Image 1 (cartoon, one colour):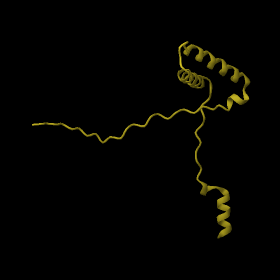
Image 2 (cartoon, helix red, strand yellow):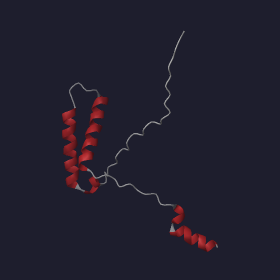
Image 3 (tube, helix red, strand yellow):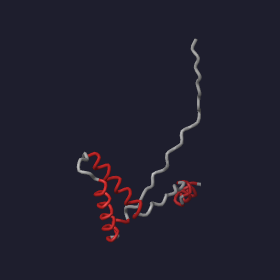
Length: 99
């Protein structure tokens, strides 16, 4: 005789947290921020790297250092709201010309 207990869970999985987007355009215009960001990335990367790292591990650590430096120094991008195209003034004008 074989006995089996089965439990079924129909809950949906939780969505992962949204990734933060940073405004890298601030680096284009602000020279002081450029140099500070470069020094910060270089320092973090040099602390993370080791002598025996492969190229893939080294690149992953470089990406981590950029992410950590961005979190500290760069402003977050503002979320853009999508505007309904039907509420545009040009669309309203075209509708009034038709009728």
